[in-house]
Length: 268
Length: 364
Image (cartoon, rainbow over all chains, first blue to last red):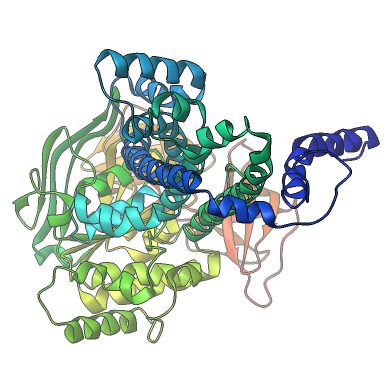
């Protein structure tokens, strides 16, 4: 960063990016229902109010089920896809991987709309289950991306050595490949979980009468009295998200260090 | 000699294609039991591919690979009586040294204590006693190699395959490990098959060497024959240094061939000095150490030729001289040991060079 112009630009950019997030905790602890400066006083009342909210707990429970299941399913699918794309060659491989990765760039609005139309057409009742299907669709590409890099950095001779020493394909996968890509798997689980937890459009469209957290928060903004409690919730969610992503990155880096590979970049 | 040893591995007209690329072009050879055998050649010559067909990591398109008289066509890698030391060593990074070494014993019916004893024994054999609890990624290159050896040898394979195992080590360590490997091979008596691109390494370590070019075995012989009597210019060029001097064949009679070599004059060669012709322009080959620089006043019982020193290359233990032979444009390189009292000659000095007809090999 030699030029002062670029330095100013970088600082300005970071402020633009993170200042709104900094406002979240500030107003979560502010002793007023109105979100405006000047601050009137310190309180933890909103956190208490949030804690008492039964609907919030039910939405949180739904979201946890959705995000947990999504993370496991997407990562499971990701393992197969990443393994296939890094180790085998087969006809139309590029096209197939492209199709798997496509939801990464498709507008979520379109995905949500189309899924809604399809579910209604084949009369699948909207519920947590349909949200999980939608979330698996959009998180699997992330899982494939993370796990492909994990499988790619795996030296093929590890597998060959295991065969050479008498193991079959299944035990080789269990004893050698799985432990070596485990950091990637953990990282994938955490990132898919976070994405699913934050996701709004699909959750809103496909959840039916089961309220999920993101949709619940959106709904609460209609009531000015509820806004500070939502800011308190938002503060907690930001903390949890940052924590999960940090853990994911920690495991990803540790995995690279462990197998002696070179870091080719990740999500953080 | 080794001729009485039974056959351990046999290749019968083995062909292998990668798409259009013909990687192995009709390999036929036998490797004997208890032999230290090397596959030597430049990169891309098919030596690693051939090694991997023994291990079972590569299938073959036509031909037969037999190990201990059994056809390996339907035997997968994990059931073959071979173990491999990988070029990267492939030490499992998430396991300790003893877990790595004991990995192949997982299906062994022996008790835990017996297995533990076997691991200790294998580690002791490669000089890593007491390293069992170390983490695999905390080892040096030489130690990794020893762990890979112990891990492969603990299963007492019929054949140990070594894929350029020394190429990742520095020169000192490499020379040390060459000797260690020879000793280890004599100790365990297992057939070793080594892949290397380093001709010196192959000469030092092997009982027999197969020199490979372009998916074919160019010559299969013991190190001395390979060095003294290479069967083609290509092999001669690959193994060590050789001077090539244009020659003309004057006549053949009774197993003797008379030639005229540029700068050296007329020479009579024995049949064994003349490998089968390939239709190339005739050349004689001469190793640098078979030529001797005569110092002023020195005489030789060998034939001599006058020359002029064109270049002096000092190597510490040796000095290499490039010498123009007797007013021709033929330049030969010769090597002299730097013994006490022997001066290094200057560029431009006129000298006599002694040589012996027996040292020549004719390529044509």
